[in-house]
Amino acid sequence: MPQARLRVDLPDGPWIADVSREYPDTVFEILTALPEDGRGLGLLRFQSGAVEAVLDEIRAHGTIEEVSVIQQTEGAATIQIVTTRPMILLAAKRSGIPIEMPVEIRDGTAIVDVAGSHDRLSELGEQFAAMGIEFHIEYIQQRLHPDQLLTDRQQELLQLAVSEGYYDTPRKCTLTELAGEIGLAKSTCSETLHRAEEVVMKKFVEELLPGADFDLQPVS
Image (cartoon, rainbow, N blue to C red; front, top):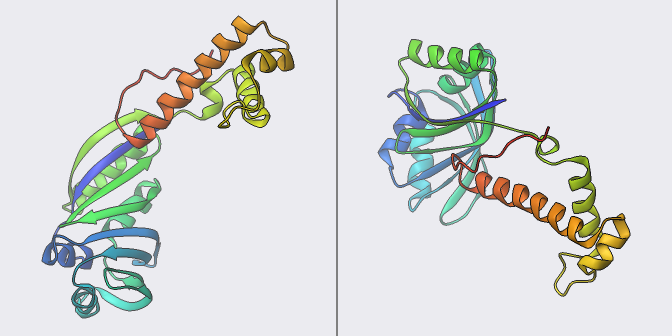
């Protein structure tokens, strides 16, 4: 399934666009959000050197109906809001594609991760255009389920290696013992394990660095 990361330039008007531009060093993270009857209900966290000022700005904005402070510290706050112009949420709902949370917003720009068919991704772009929202595609990649990346034998061997303590420090199980436990020659066990580790490590780094290309291929 295609996965895309979009850099969305929010137009002036919605509270998150206006407030984040007013305080460009503040980082907002939308943790959960739900569109409902043209409104947006959201839980978000922000980090700022001026928490009280940001809260006052949010409360005073014309598109905000409700604000509840869930948690507040000197440099951050978690709030629940109801807003009347949840533009990204409405575009996602109309195109039938879910937005992956959290969504980070800074200085009027949102980093949005979505996954869906090419048709729905195209529809999301059309919805953004109709709303006057400009965006740039940072990358599109194919998302593969872990079951598609490892063979049954590789999965079995990795699970056994973990359960037997092969990856513990210090190790509780040697490669020879692992090979004997699963019924493979030591050399075959080593090669199978190395191939599985290669896939797992590349996938892990790919998740840390979206867009990195390690030529991961589904198993046949």
